[in-house]
Length: 192
Image 1 (cartoon, one colour):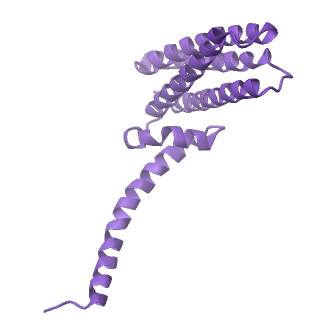
Image 2 (cartoon, rainbow, N blue to C red):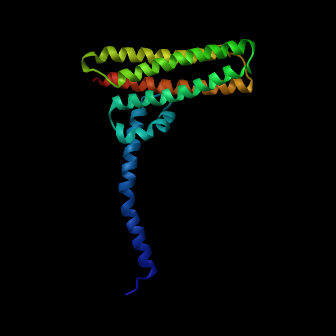
Image 3 (cartoon, helix red, strand yellow):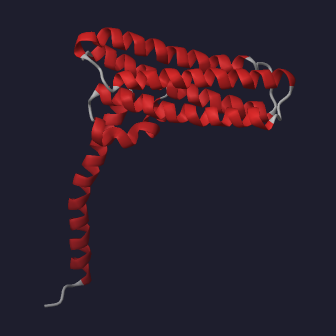
């Protein structure tokens, strides 16, 4: 018995419809995890974009979200540090800008150290010393954010293409750091 084309189309559409909700629901649920985690951040779109791949493992665990936030911040901060080191090595910037780049390299390396220190503690949180650890981590990440902001001070009032590019990269890094700080604050408020 041959099937009419309309029955085949109906069957295909019906089976597709049946398959879509479960797949879509799983994706929607994972999207919900990252949106919920990022709801406390200032730069939510950036947070969602950078952390969505962690949804499947982090789910509703504030500790995992905090670690993920600091991890992606380390990656972004490393990228900016490498960019700044490149500017330092190529000697393209002169005078005041050269000094500002040297300062930026120093403060970004300090920020990286503080972020690595934070991630190390986040990986081995202890329920008995949780509050102290969270205070330390908050202080370190806040200091990293201050370091990133300090980098831009030396370029204030300048508008060359190269300076604007540098500022854009540094600001983006500070957005990641701000988001990581918010995720850590959420973990601190949720307790061990």
